[in-house]
Length: 288
Image (cartoon, rainbow, N blue to C red; front, side):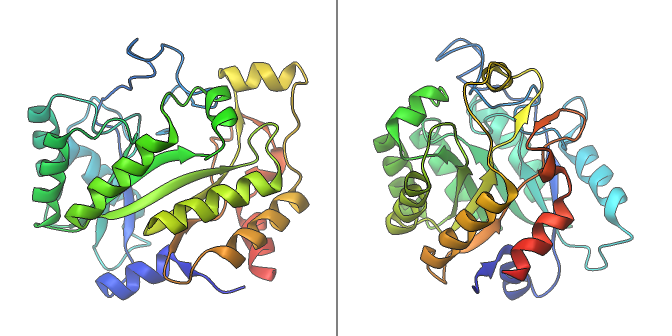
């Protein structure tokens, strides 16, 4: 069960170990500001999936320096990726996006940008900006798809149809940026076949990388209410391992696997509790 890990990809590309610094640029999301809704996706934490990012009150440069200081004993290469993680990072006026992204990409220790966003938040002016950035240093655009099952997409309040993802991939392909697609494993009422269909779809359409994220039930989310009402069960570790193995079997060897599990902030994690021991989970996956 071999696969192309993100760690290996970074070493192949940059010649050394590279660390991602999570940045909170202070953006919001159309699923929170009233454009599509106000409660976010059903699983999304209060931090907009950026719970490990720095404070948005700090400048981008300050966040990068803080991130470096946290890991400088572990990272000898001095190479970092600025990861705009929290909320939707192309959902702001273009001048603000330019200021934030150029501040990050021009930092001497930053070797690449990673921008997490929604496929429905990539207007042409943003595509042009990403194209400009990608000519300076490599850019990864991370798209939160989660599932190709339209019934599941409505349940999680994703807020856009699958065709919107298809169009986003086409636009990003046209400018040659690296596309990473987020997929959630274990969404309520999805079968193993549903999950594998999603993985196969994103690989067939041409994603360069994939993040396989175990569904976490976190405090203060609508998903937590659903779980506590007994409306669904989370995956056991054995079930998750079985699905991950099947995913790796169908992911082409040229598609980089950025993540095989995921972190939920332990103070907020309701279920599955076995996922809190990430080292144990990764060791189990490696044993496969």
